[in-house]
Structures are given as structure tokens and as C-alpha cells.
Amino acid sequence: MSAPARRMLSPALMTLLLGASFLVGVVRAAPAYAATCGGKTGINVVVDFTRLGGKVRVGCDHKKPANGLAALKRAGFTYTFVPRIPGLVCTINKRPRRCNGAPARAYWSYWHARPHGKWIYSNMGAGEYHPQPGSVQGWAFGNGKPPKISPP
Image 1 (cartoon, helix red, strand yellow):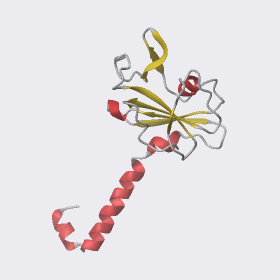
Image 2 (cartoon, helix red, strand yellow):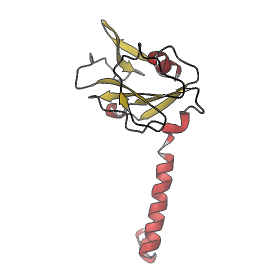
Image 3 (spheres, one colour):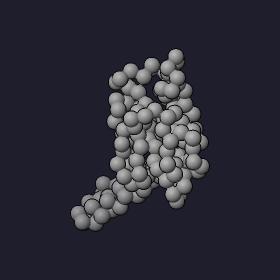
Image 4 (cartoon, helix red, strand yellow):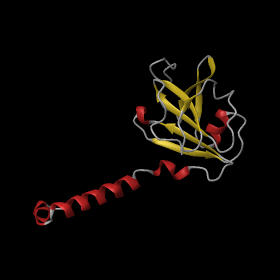
């Protein structure tokens, strides 16, 4: 909207228009939940790439996975392990670009939650954990903080 047109509008109408355009932007900016599972049979998998310059992505494993790694893969993500440390995830969808060896300041942390609940840091590796149908699995790159979105 041009500056002369803004001056002709009342402050209340301008606030309403700006608020409406902000809300439209929020609706368009929230596609992360678009891939969530419906019902109580699938496993939602949230992967937070924001510390790597990306976005939060959500996928769905429609079957009961053998473990958290199987859920990650069937939800549409790829992963690699830290060389010579099988079971410790180093990259998801080739991010970070080069495996950094998973130092304490930047690694893929693994989380669990109930739908719309709170993230709980996993005390088990994803290869050992058996997610229940209807649960949410989360991955976030960084220093051990949960994904930036609430569990779907």
C-alpha cells in the first residue's frame, strides 16, 4: 500500500489491515504441520533444521516402526551415522553438509512427545527406542534444545 493511501486510512482501519496481512502471512508460513499423521496409528516425526539455515519439517510414518531410526526413514528423511560410532546420527537429509563428529556444542538431539504435549529429551538412542503409535518423535540440530515447534 502506498504512503498516500495509508495516510487516508484511519489508524484503526490501518491496524486491522496490517493485522490481517500479518495473519495471512502466519497461515502461509506454517506448512510444517501439513505432513502430520491423522488418527492414532502413525508416528509424527519432526526434524528441526533451523540451526542449519533450514526450516522445521514434519513427516509421518504410517506404520508401527521397529525403532526411532525406522520412523525417521519412513517419514521421508535420510540419515548417516558418525564414522566409527554406529548409532550416533551425524546427518539428516545430508545436513550438516559435512559430518562434524557430533561435538557437544552441535549434534542431532532426539526427543519424544505425546501429540500437542511437551518435548522430552530421549534417554535412549533412536535405534533402541520403540515409539508407540500416535506418538511424536523430534530431532533438533544444536546444543540439546528441542525442536522449535510444539509437537503436532
